[in-house]
Length: 456
Image (cartoon, rainbow, N blue to C red; front, side, top):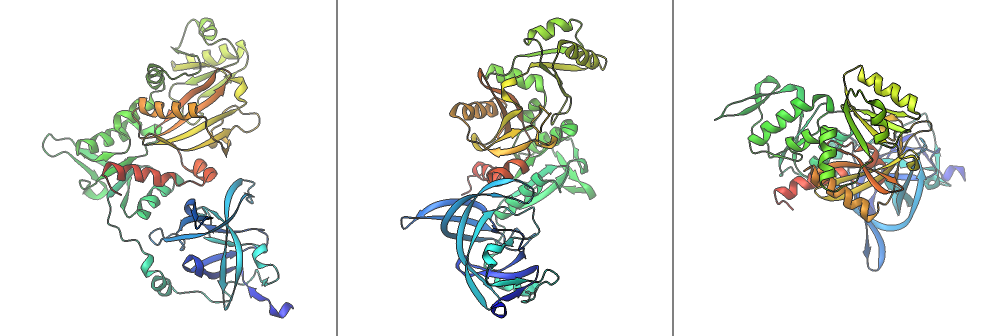
């Protein structure tokens, strides 16, 4: 019986004829129960009265130009727990696996594996009774050369014939930035990463210009996606404004980004649009600390530095004495501060609604880690998929419109008074929300640019 089994190394190449995937590298992992295939743009549909699912795959690691459009019968929808403890609901398909000279049917879940080293994970359920694994070996059944891969995928290479899009940001290795670059390339656009600090401009009434390192003139872009860190808001918005002067479409305008970064101004704009927020007080090094505390209903309360981001400069004061101490400490910095009522019933949870071009494309619930009241993912908070109410979606869309943002991360907290808006972010991160929802939000951002140019 043992001699009939094939022996695999820890890494092997295989194929999926029914999906049109001629070669894909797999991690052979007997420690994993379920097999998983890299997939994006996953969408269920009905075919001949049966449930099917369609999806796209980049079968070659670090190659986003090679795309296979797949569809397969939908077997199930399951919650899968990763090795890191993260739970994700995935679609399950069944198809034939071909490896070496043998093939058999296996079940696989579909998930975004961009952050993984392999596009395919072969788990023990798919290997049971058929495979022995020698973890010290690799590619026991052979591996294709670069030329072989180029030949088998020659009809799957997407030719770039779209827009010239610049991503104006600081860190090309950041997940969000990598995903936006990848999404643009997958949709056939010419993508360029433009480091904000390496851009400089010529102010001239007749021939305004933006230059890049080495004296390159950036004058042939169709669109710019600004992803500006708070610490360089002034310069990043100045560059965005210069692109606007050159009649380049900017996904978020310089004006919208500037006002979104001013917490007080943004709250005033939101209130003018009739959007409810937690009761808030604002002062510059206040003398009358006691009245400021009373203004928001007393402790517990939140004290924020006006310039704080990602949960930094935000303090929970649980008693009057603590509130006075924090306010007085910020007062010594001659700082502008916001004092805000604490929504205890939220239990350290808030919602992040991602709005693109006037539509909520994804929503997650963020939950603070034990002992923490801030739900920011950067501070150890966890994300889970949640369905927003119609009112919450309406608030998010109105908030993005009030701020004139085409792309916005809108944070809402659920209170006994109903949903309250906390903040609107003009450069929201993608990692937490894409990972939790398995949605191609970067692709939605590129689609918003295409819509502006009336591209199908």
